[in-house]
Length: 312
Ligand SMILES: CSC[C@H]1O[C@H](OP(=O)(O)O)[C@H](O)[C@@H]1O
Image (cartoon, rainbow, N blue to C red; front, side, top):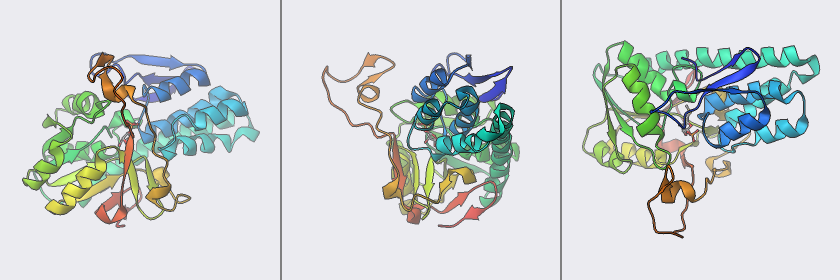
């Protein structure tokens, strides 16, 4: 199953807001529809956003305003802007050249995720590994297989996976809804945990490695990823557990010097005070909702890409 693709002249993507209850494929014909899908996380995850950005330029038909709106639909994952730029670079050659460039972004992502899975599995030592992860970094965050969860899938295929401990990942529950759905489909053993249980289980010696994706990696190795990643990095460091970031080269942003320079998306109070429209907090409760945090490079054991292992 591909999370996002170009089919018969339109973008097709799985509407992830409906998972795990319903697997519905949307056909996207305009930039407006695509921007809406990105902003409500129907399509999400840095590599998938890169492919969405590139394919979206085909729908824009060269309109600079639409391209600008697409490029800035979500600020933290560098891949969105990077994907748009990969396609925009061919605008002067005409629509077919733009589409060919966008399809290369798609195909390169498929190859990169498979390569990251192999490289990450080769890096980790041990035959019955207990892996902890936050958010969703599987095929739903890419075109196929994914990044950190792609390593988990390769470990499972090699018979080296004991279990995955999945943080539910408040507030949008990408772990509880998406990662569990993907792990069940690959028949990988897993248990769901509350976000705040992560550091405790690390301290208890229940985890052999933490694997996470990334939305933007600064030039010095500081890494932005889903909120909750930093807490896991602190817990992993104290517990002496490897903390490994898995991301394609396109997520490394050499123009952003450090994590302090990464824009962290603020997704507003509604996602915090309610879940799927059911209010949790008293009416009028104010909230803070940073969608990502930044893990300093000195808390990261290694960054695995499709081409290399980087030790910050
Ligand atoms: C494989 S990168 C996926 C990355 O994106 C997620 O954020 P969101 O669900 O808001 O797009 C999260 O940070 C994942 O690690």
